Image (cartoon, rainbow over all chains, first blue to last red; front, top):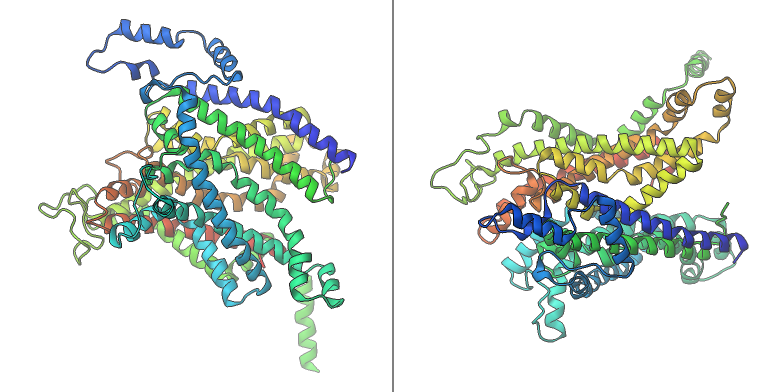
Length: 320
Length: 299
């Protein structure tokens, strides 16, 4: 690793801290810019009483000026204290997130794995047999996949496989499900919905980066010196074709934590996306704040990791 | 002999002609791509449908057909009726207005914000660049749809909120791209020349750099037109976009979901409308990208 690469990595990591502080400010401001009073969420409409609302506001610290509120919140967050939710039985926010985290991670990890398993071979075959039937089907299919609204796809799959055929459960993560296969059956539809657009993206990239590599001189050299086609593709071409894929796959990794609001909502999947959706509808500020901040921070960290990995994988890149 | 002379004349005429304008080259390349042209035709038809929606719809989108709840598609009701006995076909036609207008306004906002910020960051560099791009990084770090939902829910949901919120939360990738393009163009000699004769910064940005970045911007615009429609239908589906009684494709899907077991037509047709619209815009966007830069054509 050259000195400039090392410098670059150190700089990226140091830059993380101001970015995280900036993120917390932006998130806090966006949520508190909004009109509407979260204190009202505590008071039922029948027993509306201005003095009670005032008391609630005081208890929540909502009567203080915004910078002061930010200071209090930020100093707690720095100690990983995200407070208690306004709704959800007033559970601590961190508990709420903890309960749902694994559901989202499992579902997204499965979806991304399926996408890679389908897209990488498909992209390679597509590139090696350019303009063949397989290639045209793959490219056309990828194009269609990118235009499909995920929630509609979810509804159509539910309609067909759950309602018409009754093969698979239509929704929920099935916490009471017994046995591996029964549990797995709940994953099939949501994971498919999440995988299809990702397969489309991955296939397109794998194909184009493979095409780029395959036409380079060193591949011709490898062929000319009599290497078997298998060795040319797997040992020489694929290695370099994978480098741009690191960024593309890396871009998808934040989904592991943020989840998909819309797909989780359609399948009533008890994950973070669904939690966020409910929190938004109920104006549960601590939950919204914690979710945006934690996923945002995770994304910033993942971005740094991906860039660093890229710098190590591709020594041609120089940093000024 | 005569033939050769004629051919030479033609050749000379061709050479003497003014070089083709970029717009003409782009149009010629675009026309060759049959799928892109088909997409373009569908896009134009969709806008026409949206403009003349109330005249084209066989029924008023809010009209009831007494005693006919959830009727399957028939000659009278092509796409069937919904639970409230309204004609689904008419509602799909009128629903195009929400999607296409949100797409247009939001994509316009995204381009204006993204291009302005990207241009300033790329052209001036230094501290301004750093501040703008770090802010962009932060905004990009917040999961897009979640940010969109939060903003949409916190303000009063509705058509205008949807347009503004999509515009304000989606400009980041465009800003990044435009910044890169400005950096690239700025380094070229003709910009140095413009500077040497004392052209003011704004003039250099608008008259000299921008035209060289226009291709990227136009392609971005078409892609955002389709992506904004996807976002809008998602928001409407979750009840945070256009509000009833305004019919929107996403809202119709949410309504139809309740009766999915009995009435497939309520979820199939509005979804097809979204799918076809997004697909057509994507075809145009891809066609334009290839037409602008044939070297970059996806092989």
